[in-house]
Amino acid sequence: MLRTQDDSTDLLKLAEGAFAGERDPWANAANAAALVFERLPDLNWAGFYFLRGGELVVGPFQGRVACARIPLGSGVCGTAAAQRATLLVPDVHAFPGHIACDAASNSEIVVPLLASDRLVGVLDLDSPRLNRFGADDARLLEALAERLVAACDWSLAAIDGF
Ligand code: SME
Image (tube, rainbow, N blue to C red; front, side, top):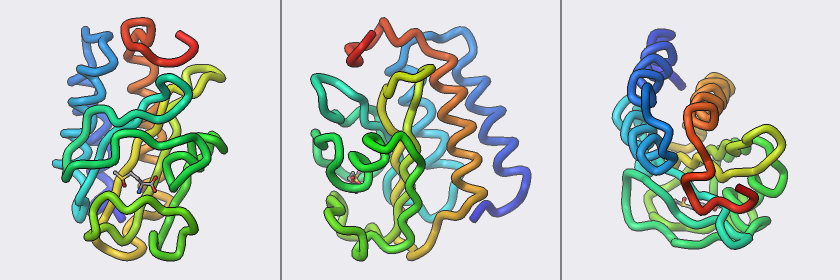
């Protein structure tokens, strides 16, 4: 649930400003995580996992300490990565195999990062509110993921396939 229509425009504009002139994936992902955590209400975790050595490895994030590695196909992140599809989970306790990093989390959204047809990683947001994320959030975060992927030179990071 976005608070106003302007939230999405603001977030994307701020992200484009933060990415301008910067091609490093870690730098841009760190600023993207900070922007999402600051601009979207009711989050307890926002950040990235990147595909390295055949599994998802935690990247820049805001929130509590998270599990470092997630195999493809495991948890919400690994499932979204394997399916290359956005996953909206209204109640994480009802998601088989959900990986609980923070006991406060009740709902989650995971958006895959795709560079052409290559999986780069995922953007993951957690909320203490049940059913926090809707279709508008999915559209906004997919647009942010697209901009992040386009802004970066992925050969600068140890991402599988680059
Ligand atoms: N809940 C995720 C794990 C990552 S944390 O939420 C930061 C999952 O099930 O994949």
